[in-house]
Image (tube, rainbow, N blue to C red; front, top):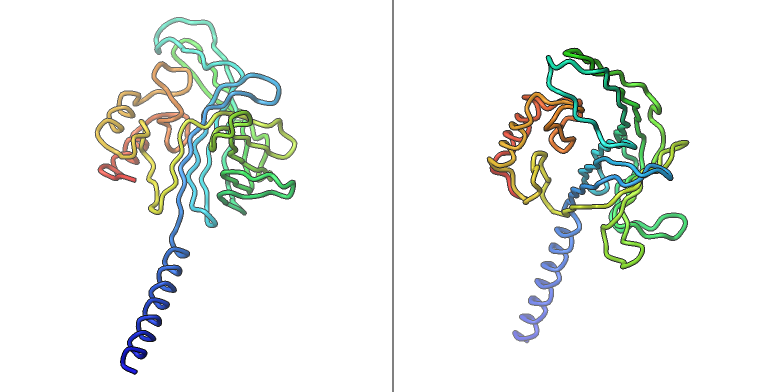
Length: 247
């Protein structure tokens, strides 16, 4: 009898442990960081950069910049030059309605990563002339529905290989995924070299491009963390705030 009671007690304990473990696993948050390079805008070759942070089933922050020609390098202020005019596009996710991993859409296609929501799209024009410059941002879309998908390579089947941003009434933006991480801790901004930690090398990299804007030597959208078209103290401060963080 004692053995039977002990056995029943053990079975109940194991059941409770299993239930608690399952509940803990189910309650674990999942965070994603993915970085990509733009390769095309509709039928045209394009250049650009994608960065997306997300908490699955909760929120996402996505910024993407792209252009159909490489950004020119404008001489330093004070050098006499003819006007240099160039434009690029940016899209920002302003409201995420669905953020999923391994999501099967209505057409039966399964995506590695799927973000559905509303997007703002701008056409940004920079004008440099001699020692002066200005830029103008023309709204193209405001809170337009759109979907970001990350998919396996269509040939090899390797996961997390390509992405597409499809926004209503705009040509699709396509590219290659160069980095992604899936974690149970929130992934901070500021890992510029994508080595899984924020350290002095990240701060130094951003500091080296301090003061640059699109068209100036040293500017890189990867270091424009707040996506305001200039690398300044705000970007350095964001990296410094996460100094020492690993993910």
